[in-house]
Structure formats: structure tokens, C-alpha cells
Amino acid sequence: MKVLVLVKRVPAPGAKINITADEQAVDTKNLGFAMSPHEECGIELAVQLVEAHGGTSTVMTLGAQESEEQLRYAVSLGVDHAILVPTDVDDWDPMATASALASAIAEAEAGEPFDLIIFGNESADSGGYQVGIRAAHALDRPIVSGIKSIDIDGETVKARRQTVAGLEEYRLTMPAIVAVKEGITLPRYPTMKGRLNARKAEVVASPQPHTPGGQKRVRLIPAPEQVSNTVVLGEGPEAAGKIVDLLVELGVLS
Ligand SMILES: Cc1cc2nc3c(=O)[nH]c(=O)nc-3n(C[C@H](O)[C@H](O)[C@H](O)COP(=O)(O)OP(=O)(O)OC[C@H]3O[C@@H](n4cnc5c(N)ncnc54)[C@H](O)[C@@H]3O)c2cc1C
Image 1: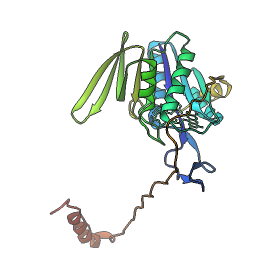
Image 2 (image 1 turned 30 degrees about the vertical axis):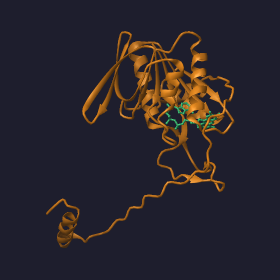
Image 3 (image 1 turned 45 degrees about the vertical axis):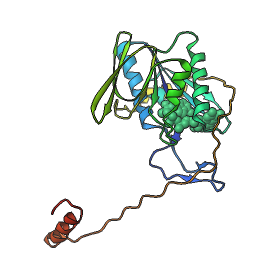
Image 4 (image 1 turned 90 degrees about the vertical axis):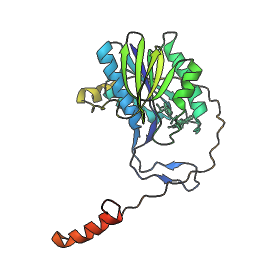
């Protein structure tokens, strides 16, 4: 089967994010970059599907030239082909992104559709939750989001989503699209051979005309820092009373 995974270069989750003085961009001076955790699981899913069913896997991103780093990382994990949709225009609009990705996908397919296209459920930085759905609409393919497990059964993808009411199962006829959540697979680490392959891999560029999106950034606001305090209640048996008081205060004991 032919599988495509879409990834986005984002500041490494967990890093402290600073905003530039003009409040228009993330200050990337001291930041490492990664792909979103959902997408890492999507990469692992693609590699496992090709291991199980044969075929090829491809990874694609839209972003600046530096995004090659994330494409090569995907190759080091076992993905076969990498496509960069390069842009040096600063535009963060999900509608424009989905439209550019949909036409890059159509171009890469050249009339032979990917059986399964895997998006992350949402990106780790802007978290718009919409690129996969908009791209599926543009490509006229079925999509389900929030997916935590899948099986391939002939031409059908059985995709499952966890809800408070239980497990929902959707059956999509391929070619189809899923937006997956972290936990669908356990991502592997790259091997030495994988890293060497990634260095040599060809990254195909898919040129795209820039269609400006409808959203305009006004300014970025750093998220409030979550401060946590540690209070030492005491040591040894004399701390027991204070612990009981605290458990009562928290409602754990009455
Ligand atoms: C002209 C133009 C220039 C851009 N320049 C840059 C840039 O320099 N650097 C940059 O990082 N982004 C760039 N983008 C992309 C844009 O910043 C966001 O990726 C986009 O708005 C997605 O929003 P989101 O993260 O909220 O999406 P969500 O809807 O939360 O993303 C859901 C899923 O969609 C997929 N996805 C999202 N964005 C991308 C992407 N860019 N490439 C591949 N898959 C993706 C991922 O699988 C992700 O998990 C540009 C977009 C345009 C149109």
C-alpha cells in the first residue's frame, strides 16, 4: 500500500517559548525543533503498515528549508520518500496550508492515489485541528480524526476513536485519510543505518504558488508560566499530623 504522512516542524515540546520584541514571531535563537508527538506516532504507523502490507511510505511537510530536518528524521525511522513543499513566505493560515498541501499531494500522486494519508490530530504549536479535514475536503476523500487504532481489511480502513461513551469504529474505503492521536503506536528510535540513510536521502521539492490565507496575525502572547511550589511539611513521624491536615484540606480525608 501507498502511505503518506504529513508532519510540521514545531519548537520542541517542553522548551520555553520566547516571543520576539515586535510580538510577531517565536524567538527561535535557542530552540530545538521537532515534529508534533501525534505525527511521530503517525510516522511509526506508516512504517508498520508498510512492514505488514508491503508498499511505500512518504513524508511531506510545508515550511521553510530547515523543515528538511524533520523529513530526514522520518526517513531515519524507516520512511521511504520525503517531499518538502518549500516556502519562505511567513503565513500561518490553516486554510492556505491545507490548500497548498492538497495540491502538493495531488501532484505527488500523479493519478495514483495514496491509499492512506495520515495527519496528526493537531499540531503541537498552533493546534488548529483543521488542516487534515480541510485537505480531505479539497481532495474529496473521507477522513476521521481523533484516531487511536486502525486495522486494514482489504480496501477498508477500520479506524477507532476513544470517547467517554466507549470506542467508536469507523470504516472508510481507501483512498482515505485519518488524523491520529499520540498513543496509536509507540515510536521507535532511529538506528545507525537509518541515520545514514537519512543523510543520503533525496528530498524532493514540490513548488507551490502562494495563495494568501484569510487569517492575519495581530500579535503573539506568551502563555502564562505555570509555577509550582514545593513545601516541606516536616521529616519523619512528626510530619504525619501535617500530612493528615493537608489530606483533609484537599478533601481526600474527612
Ligand atoms: C505560505 C505559507 C507559508 C508558511 N510558512 C511556514 C513556515 O515557514 N514554517 C512552518 O512551520 N509553517 C509554515 N506554514 C504552515 C503554517 O504555519 C501552519 O502549518 C498551518 O497554518 C497549520 O496550522 P495548525 O498547526 O494550527 O494545523 P493543525 O490543523 O493543528 O494541524 C493538523 C495536522 O496537519 C498537518 N500539518 C499542519 N501544518 C502542516 C505543515 N506546515 N506541513 C505539513 N503538515 C502540516 C500535521 O499532520 C498536523 O498534525 C506556512 C503556510 C503557508 C500557507
